[in-house]
Length: 500
Image 1 (tube, rainbow, N blue to C red):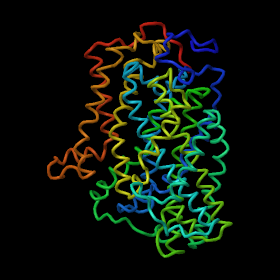
Image 2: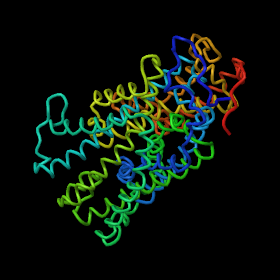
Image 3: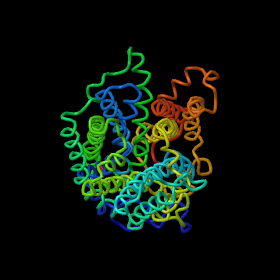
Image 4: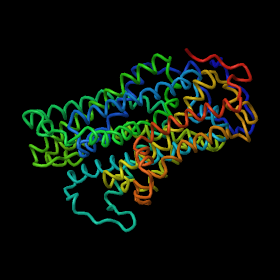
């Protein structure tokens, strides 16, 4: 049983172990349901959550259809979140270590790095958003016109925007250096404050528009049910894809939970309701802007800048900076930090992995990812097609093939039970590849590389459900391949008793 005893003497070369990847002892599993709920409130309250419903309304939905789609998508993703969290809570292990049981002790690096790259993209996007909030604050304090700027060659942004981006980047890195305990403190401190800010925005919207404005009276633009479902499918997949990343690496957090009850309740309390609330606040506030400014303003940074009053704008923008920081650190740094550490445990610690993620987040130039709504939605759909199959394999392996029983010591041993073929599980990798491939034609059409006329309609429709179909295909194939190979479904050595 995993206990407070000293860490076992793992192989001296430390190829698979370092203190950051080691199982969390029971004495350090101190996160209760309210800690986990606060974590989710801190992650869910961010500008992308505020803007989620905007793309759905632009596609033709009315306000309640858009908010309901957001709520449904988050209730759906709550299921894999709770399931994948179980192993983290049971054995105290992080996401990349859990992957070793299904993909092999070295094969785990393939899905872990896929997750890490997506996280780095999100880290860059959120850092850009936080940097723009700082840029707007600077424009008010210094007195320059933020719209009058000269873009730097190659980068496509101004020197001022780049400077503010790097300032917010440095704030994130400062938290990374402090470690996981600082992240918990930050989320607990920020959650109630951010909820109050959201309710304040909602109050302003109601008063300013003498109600909730014209968006709430705007009917659906769909003439038939079929038109609705055509827009609903990719919209729902994009919503699920929003947290598809966390549905994989949730063990990075649930490993600190006191019990399975705490991790399940904490997530149920903190995530779906907060996401739906902030989507509603985004719709209500934007509806009010039509009355006040004569046009819809979906970007809260742009909205706050229009008030001109520094006593309103500066606190509001600081709140957005805080919201973006809490989301970015928990959602987009913890996972790649552990994933990069898993790649070379002897040399890469959690802090070093976090710094690597930070550098990648700069190199990808994230301002191009958020340049327009189509690119942003395709980004969500694209990585959903990659990560859905990973989630399907993880859940099939842990719950169906292994019956929630792992051999924790073997997860850290080269040549042990999870070594498979040279450290790689060819069965899991085959299921992963076959779960991704059917979505490639649709993705190539979405990004304009292939003419839609050359791709059968089935594959175009499949891409709209990429997370669901990828999850289901990989889930079924992983079980089938293991049954055909007659792979043992129980640990070969006595397993530690999981936490109930």
